[in-house]
Length: 446
Length: 175
Image (cartoon, rainbow over all chains, first blue to last red):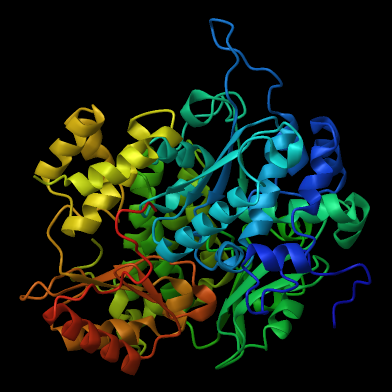
């Protein structure tokens, strides 16, 4: 392998190309399946948490919060007002919907047992007896595959009562969302799991205190859970060594857009964006113009900035984020204003509407970009865009508004000349380009 | 009766998994959507009665999520992702092609109520862009020719009363 990392080995995807890799038999025979669980059940919960803490596993859903620490926030014996013990819930966030991110779907279809095992181990660690898997609504097939995997795990005694004779009980329930990007935000997800509108909650109280159905809850991403069995089987040292000082292990990177081999790649974190593009077969159809390094919400990078490493801290230092590991590559045939409008149209549609800054802001940003594309933009618009973004970021209940400003602000800052060209030449038509069919407002979204 | 006995049975079958009645609302609306192709006001009223929820709660949820349609739809919902990765890989061409083939704009239903054409947001299939959904089924790396072929096949299937785009659904089984 070309990766300049002697410790690296795939944690989640070693066998995803082999036929039958999604079955329980395959997992047990070829991948140390449920060995991590066996080991964990012989350990005390605090020891399991400690193991995960030392492995430096960080949340793979976008925020990159240390997983072991999140687990340790769960209260030991929560009681209600009458002194009765409250249940604790473990929740898996499988509402994968960040444009450019498609790694969790791979886990669902190719190695679901790894995630299930990770969840049972996590359940033991936080002393919870029930887990919910919140799956995005569009995944009909994937949800059914996951349900099948769960049924198989029940049949073999990995789920249910007295797992492997340890006295530990754990149940897993699949729940389906219904098409709302915002439900990937953990508190919105909890509301949706309760059968409500997926509107994010004010924090505090944090989910570890008041989560699903009012009970202490812990929410983690699919990939995070899928990494846990390896840590138990091979030990935290090996996992931690593969990563950087502050972030252990490997990452699933979904490369899409203008590359020759778009796919999910499991990679170490000491690679640059340029390395990743090379691994994905290089840029297709032109020269590299820009990269969105961590799902649509991550501020974009210009081609000359793509030497940056892809660990959480290096990307944060470069003013963007590792996010959910979706690398979107744009070549030089793309007009950045158009590309950004594609994203803003999405955010405008997906804002939950709770906070006015976000509801109005995402709407106005999309309108302004559209106006610039249509030839009605002015130089002042560019300053207004920055001003609107300033009124959005950090002003709302959840981070959605910050996510909207990521592409909007970075495109204006880094590709200002493209905006000015559109403004001065009278929009796309003035530049001899056609308006994108999907940007037309006829019929539009339903 | 918008709420069939079959739906009630499916939902009662998963009732024990959830601590509250309201948690069953989204699964119930999914089943209604599947059965009727949309969620009517009558269906919402019955859903509320079934789960002991006020209509307002049912309605606020049904109107929040894009997968619950509040107006009648075509039998086949052709959903084309036009978000960034698909857009970069030619989703526009698919939209034009589908508009031409079906004679409607995105967001509209054909006169014979056979097809609804919808532009959707990211389907988490960016590595195999452009991606589309026909009802419940994904199709990836779709070309214009394949799209036309899929639509032609669906049209035939609808004419012969076959179910379209629900290849993994088992009746009465959640999910």
